[in-house]
Length: 501
Figure 1 (cartoon, rainbow, N blue to C red):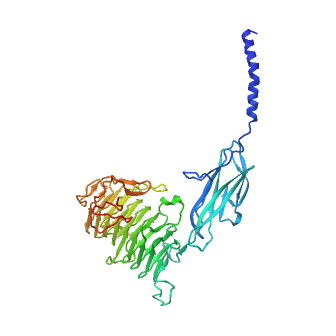
Figure 2: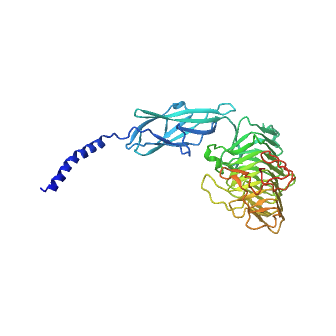
Figure 3: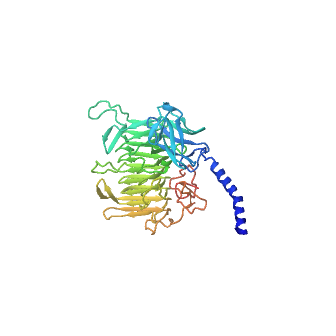
């Protein structure tokens, strides 16, 4: 053997023990079986203490199922026991691997993998007006380690309006009706003039209907929640008064209150107002509907009577609708200091009738929680052509005047008018900021064309104006709107839109 080979052999026998010791040391390292479980609640910000929260849940209704994942960060599979602390008496229920139970033994979680835990809450009637807190915990016992996820929900008793008559297409409950049946002459148990108060919220299944010649008054601070396909219906020649205030607006929205639904659409149907109705909606928030507010005749009428039919909407926000914010046909509507945004079709669609629009803010940058087609309809649509009114088309005179409005959004032209020869189209835009590819004959010389209104924060749905907005001080004064939607004085130089900077 050469001298060089001997040197290599010596080095080999010196290094070999070190290699063997290293391998033995590595093989003796215990796997990380005792790492704690990790919980993911599908929220942008994870709470420091694992907690699953539910928004207000109405008594006797339950809630949407919420879920979270339990992640095993170890290199080996592990088993854990999962226990609902409150047991069978808990308001909460849990589902693990497709099974509802309160106690799950030896649940296996593969290495570097997760399982889903589904949680529901059901609230028993509390007979109290104020929300009450419900709590519990889910316990995880993994070897000698104990972890828990807290559960928290607010329960709320409510007034329930449940449809009890009508066809499948229009199931309704008369909430204000004549006390004497006009046919039998027998008492019906109805009250002709009804007031909804803010003490408890109202939860509506089907349509809450106001009978002809009867009235419904909704006081400030009242909250009305509608189940899927439900709505509020002011029938012909009824009366609806929504008397919200700046500090206590009246809320109309769907009955799913989890945060995800705040920007979702079509959670309920609409507020529907027929001919002859005396309707005033003041300081309200209308959100998550298929259509926000619809004003048109009941379809049984072959002769449409528009006299003495005026709907007033003021200081109101209509947002997050699948289609129109306001759909009005044939009748008469005045809107003042209103904000319309995130509407899947037109923010308002006016077909025939008479309209006076003052200090509207329309910023239709439509987006929704669910995937939705891109909006193509203009934010502001006015026509003397009434399309597909219960299977028929009609030409009908229209007069629409816009003062000091902001009408903008994503579409290239957000103001569109359509005329047919058989009826009059009288439209005017006075001192308005409008987004339009072409300068219309209906725009006066003071209209601002294709200017960025400089809203404060569109993503956060804040449509107040920044200090550099071109809409500041450009409004026509003395048009009968001394205050903005927040009660601020407009002074001698009113800003365009619903908000005075």
